[in-house]
Image 1 (cartoon, rainbow, N blue to C red):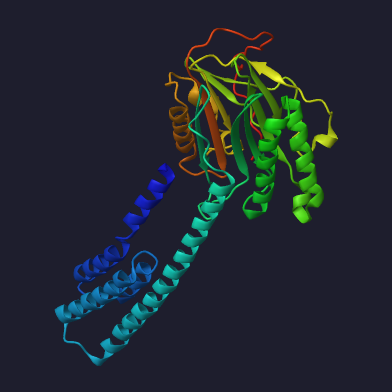
Image 2 (image 1 turned 45 degrees about the vertical axis):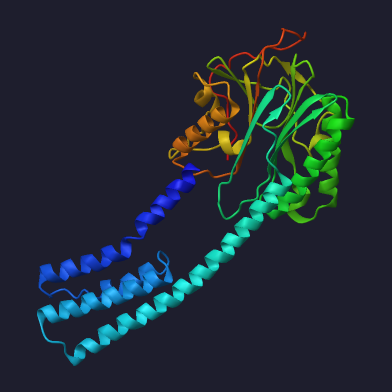
Length: 382
């Protein structure tokens, strides 16, 4: 939202540019006593107005430029036949600017319609998750790097099943419409596996098989498709957080003013590349204390760079006292990313967070307690 507000504010400021050009031409002519020809600046005003103002505003700018030009001529001398050419040119440029404005307005409407269609497709494929699932408070965000491409390859999902609450965040290789088929297929496969697979390895195997099917059916660049993913599970007693990481960014556990990376004990290949590695699916176990927040995100966050090329560190941004509220935590993270990058993302970013509410008796055995990371983790290159 901050980037959209900044863009709109910049557009509002630019709307004054045609008036500034006309005023500058008038002042320059008065100061130089007509020694400098200001008609080129007056002629430029309606052309500048065409992409910035409405059709009425563009025509008004051209009329004002003509009136200012006439006023300057009458202030200096009586009009002559030599003045016909510059005024005719100014009128002609105003007509051209009006035509350009009409064309640009039509293109903007078509682009807006395309964006609305893309947004509708995005919402249909990736609907907002419920605000609460069991004892979990849920929040999500989807930030597009380019407004012209409102469809991306990032996805997330959460399901409450007889086997526990299961979550997924993934990043499909590619962008735009070509990635939607893969996103939709993975989401459908995940939803089905959540109810039929008794454990996380079963879900991963089903997702892997679906991804391989997509690759086998694809052609061209899509034959090299793959998806990084994190699949998480909380049993019905919330005693342990189980994670499977397939080449994805490590989730963060935010609690008591600290953000800890839940790094996988054993690195694994992304979905679609599993045939190149072992068939084993390592499952890591962590505690999720009451009031703690699990934050999952795609590489649009930790691979965001500042003006000097330095990567953004989400762990550092969240290592401070924060409310036990997933919406606040995601907003804090996005604000920090925007500040780091100057408001410009180079890749789409999906964020998903759950906070465990209500106290529960301590439970679960064999849990691996997350240890504080020793320094910033290495981010993969953009």
